[in-house]
Length: 477
Image 1 (cartoon, rainbow, N blue to C red):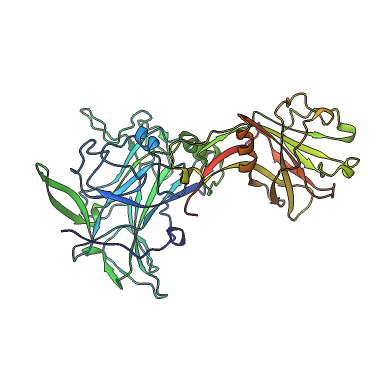
Image 2: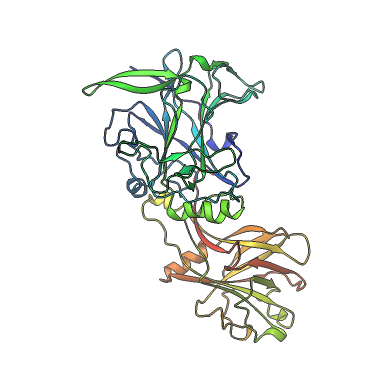
């Protein structure tokens, strides 16, 4: 019988992994996925052959097995990842200590990164894209595989080292970093396509991020870091650690085989929602914006966005303006004789997902993701978002005919002068609209104070950083 051990329960969010960078830009996002299950399956190399592959530890999608595809990953979308938009399948070989004890990983954290993105714009992951990294027959250091001990000795590709328990008393931790190819041929989803050439579907860019001519599509660099904890050890000689290899099969009987840590490798099947994959590249990395927060499960740009202004501009339309302005407290009727500007936004509502349990579905929230800040002075202030009707046109609406705001319900946001993306939580407002059968929702944005000298400026849908209505699902924060 195989011996196994489970690491001490430690919240995955209390642990950290140093990303394995390779000439990366600053534009990145990450997702952390707890260990899910172990199977002798491999949906890439041994599709539809359950129990015939090496023992693999799986992360992310909890349904992953020998027959997984993008369709099954999205239909059975439950995941151990923090971001519910990511139902990808991640797996790596199992790890065994010299005494025969198999140690399950605590989690893996994957960094999605760019390599010189201004010169090499990214293509979003296509549905179900498969990627392979490492060499399961490796016998020497691999520049795409790295080893990290939490004793302060840093990353290395060599197994000629011993991890030691940190001096501060923390549990000994060992990470394996796996860097996947980032140049895709633009047409082949399978990592090991059939055919006489048997060419891979993806290769690595050069150090400047350039892809070869026959692999023209630059995709985000997937850097998976698998973390193991060893609460009972004070040291770990990496030369004695073993990783699973494909068994020798005699019918349905398995003869297990094991190799050194140089056989480390990883598998990835993209299961991000299409909107999340698109947002990662088009709205973040290609846009020179560091989206370190969660990717949206779904998002929509505005159907319409504009602002209206009172006093001498009360009959003027600002539908062609490239800025959205907010000034004054429109809720306070005593302020109507003072300068006021109110932003109006209208969206198609992204529908809630139907492939999660009620418990996970309850974690999804609607966020108004808007770029801007206070432009007249420094310091923070609260602004307010109220629901309004959708029967207005951005090309004709003025202060004199603007829709009435529902001041009984609101979402608030405290912001300062920094120009950056900020999020209103509008879950309550959107769900109220959905309960009324609405497929669209509109908002008006106003300040809550009476200082009419303060102006807030936001981007419109015609600019680089437009405002979006996002559906975001996060677990294990």
